[in-house]
Image (cartoon, rainbow, N blue to C red; front, top):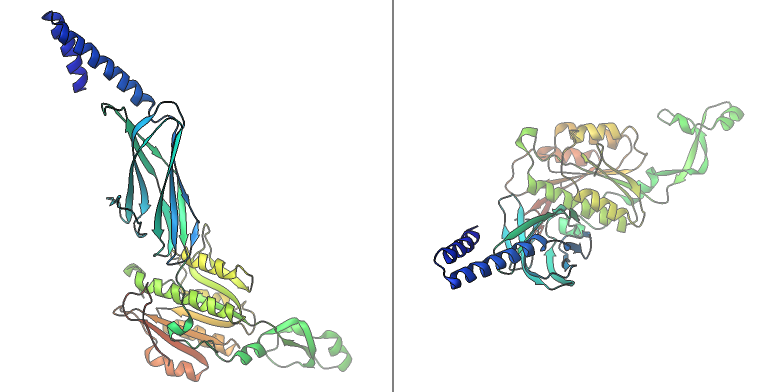
Length: 415
């Protein structure tokens, strides 16, 4: 506005004082201002900024490339273009142009560039995936104007994109768990898990046998109720329960370090069990992605089962309102006979121990993995571990030394 007043003032002064130079300068400045205004009016038209990932999903610790493409699809050049792309704060970016915003856990990647007519320029940055979760990118703020900098225009490009970083998983030896028979006696698991499609024979019905497996033809022939016997299942099943709760009282919030370590331990066990030939499933007392139900993956050995487990663990964010004790109590009624249960939790209550003991008595091999972050308060299995071992529950205590999310050093006490 000041330049406009200046141009008008020069024209008026030149006319009043009959000064041709001032009048000419006023007209020249007015013409330049008019040109600058028109330039700024169209500077952002047909200008696009695109963001592209080398991959939309990444494992913990990976580095991915983020490409920013700037395009000017018109005859009028863009002498300068300032771009501010909003990035998630927890993910480090290898760029000197990063600045932090007033928003929590956000950062801005700033870029200044000039574009000729019909020009496309691409810049590459590297993002280190060092934090589990679903990370949101955008929006993008752009600003440009005329070549003189008299007038400026701004715009916003939504470009909503997400990057999913899978949780870290490590060999179970790093957790202090034995690689062989980490979940108890493998033979016992095979004996308990039977395949209803492989009939081995019949025997006299005994109290506790499932009425579903009564052999009615043999019963009619022998005059005594008979039940079917099945061959052991070819593939043992393992179901991991990952407890999202980290504190005894809900209003105390979530211990993030304990939750991250719990998720890392669950992911590590899932990876190990699949490598050992188990059919592996997962249940979490947290909402599944884009759903109002808890995370529940049935046991499977499908090639993508580990990826599905890691993705569901990566997206854990909100508690579903269902305690792990209630979830266990609900699921044990429909749990296949003989499936191995692995409970991974940083919070161990007497009610949880009661349900685990009930599962063990029902014929399920049970492993309790208690996760402890150094320096964090919480209930512990404590003196109950001896009783657990005596009643056939395998117990491990995984404890960090240092930052939980890094899992650089683990100590273990069993029993």
